Length: 89
Image (cartoon, rainbow, N blue to C red; front, side, top):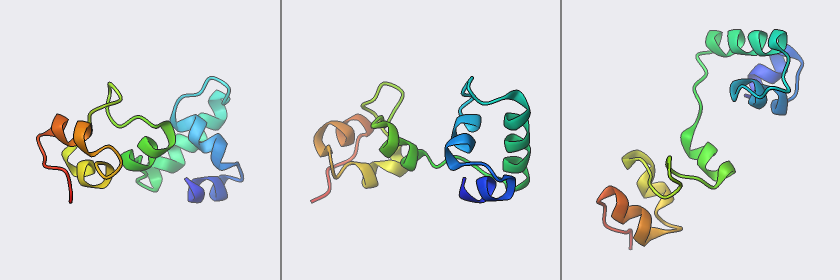
């Protein structure tokens, strides 16, 4: 997101809002940001998003198998149980 913001002269908050379809971001700005994101092959980082939102899965309790080892440290029992993994020791 930093690269997109720098390239277009907007804030990271604006880029984030455009990528999340925030209605406060103008359609013109959103289109520019989405075009630049596509050019840079930007894809959201689900682990980073989980840290920001505090939500790991669609119901707030599950997590993907790839993120499980990273995220299970904080809430080992519930999250690891949900994806069928053993908590890390």
